[in-house]
Length: 93
Image 1 (cartoon, rainbow, N blue to C red):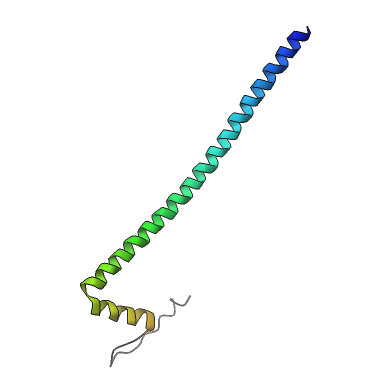
Image 2 (image 1 turned 90 degrees about the horizontal axis):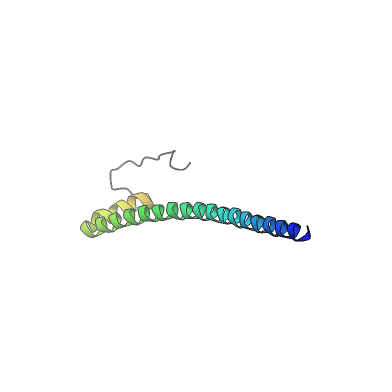
């Protein structure tokens, strides 16, 4: 009778260990999937930013004077003679 209880106890412990390991691995896999999704979203944003910068670089190479003028207007708020400045109140919000 003692051997039978010991075998049952060992069997229950082995099954418990296997279940614990399985659940633990599922939790780890879920965390890694969430992290992978986050990194893929970051990668997509970086690719879009890279594409935008590449287009801006090409514009600067193709028409350097137009590019400089656009930057002066956008960043510094400069205007040409006889132009009326327009202030967009939505941009500051």
